[in-house]
Image 1: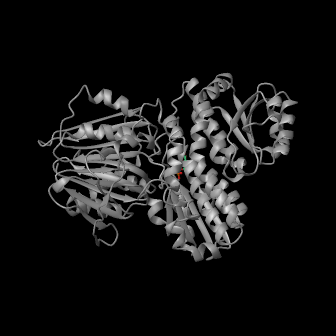
Image 2: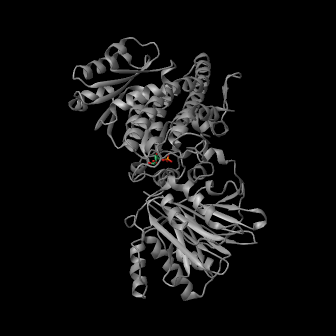
Length: 617
Ligand code: G6P
């Protein structure tokens, strides 16, 4: 994880880098640091435990002038988060500086070797080992910096996105990646360059970006075109310059108190963007190039395996119900981290769908590589355009949700479900499992979802009132069935990750096999009881909770009367097909977690110990 960014050009570098770090803070926020070098080769390095704001307050009392800078915001892997372990790190001579996102797995043996050659280390980090390895390689061979970095990296096992410079050459940055993302922004006439984990730190300066690929190293020098080489075979790579579509408003809070709240409210728009140009209700078709171009593979698939982590895994579970119900295709949903190490049975006729908001999750990426090596066709559902997973998969569909910055995923979840619904509907219709009239009806109803979410969001204040009642609960249970079982899991995950309340999601009927033992008058139980989803069975579960004095917060279909009489609180959602209901039932659960977390004084957008983009295993 960790966010890295750097600037080389004609402007003051520090303001660009510190603002960039603020935008990358979703990637980690244990500590932050920055190094700045001016044209006289004077260098200042500041780092601190804590957030980018803490770093800012330290630097602003000191000198930070110069046109070259690197910055880092950290999610600790090696070494506890403290000032010394924060990046940037310097080499023993003090001449080389580095920022690094990733893990150098063989750092210990390299460290021993370097120690035997007289190197000393201030920190516990793998990164300080790497910068000294680069220094040693340079010293031994009298290499230029780019070559030294390249040769050092051939000795490294692990994952990295790095940026390195020599303080006596303040017109050059060397950047390289393997397994962690790295984007390079190019200013006009090569007069300035930006490096960053994603493009957000530099979108107001340039729309031209190169996404570095794995095993590539870039030599970024003022006044000249970027040179990219393959680290292992030394071949040259012709850079592809991409035009960025991101804009500044998309990554700002836009009047909301938190990114999470903004992103919850963006869902109607985000879902419309997901199906725009794909769901053509007037023509009665779903048009998706990535499916159309591979239609035979999809229609002949004996099985779909979905791999993902976290919230994306929950979207995958909804996908299982969608594919099986609408298209009658068997589905298995796998945690990417388990799948990659399990020697799974994968056949050529299997389709693997990898779901990832960031497109950078290390376990999902590794699962994709494994599936590909076994001959499977891998399809990606990602939000971040140009991300590693989007590029590693054989084909795929973007969710077009726009940047999701709050660490707790919201609009990514509903837009992933929208893509899965589009694919399942299309396949179901083409393979004859879904009649034309049912298909048309679904298209119509899917198109109504954004409007329904808009209406649903108006119950925000009611949910706030419920949140105030339960904000101090130590535990909470979430129950749902069928399509809404994954929503129960997601509701529980949302609550625990941002409010630190212990929460469990269960299939409602499983309650009697254990969780029921926990129910007493202090236990809030959130139950999803939509009219078309095994309603009577869930009502019985609600009765069972009631008779044990549990507090019931029920998510029901508009107009419900039965549950109203039993539950302590009712949250009504608009009617829709059960298969589409997760797009609605999720919304109140997101809001409930949000308000509880705010009332508990938690940092909603940056919950403790978490990071948005998990680029380590
Ligand atoms: C982290 C995030 C979650 C996310 C998961 C998978 O744990 O905090 O919100 O669901 O990673 O991330 P991905 O980017 O692959 O969807």
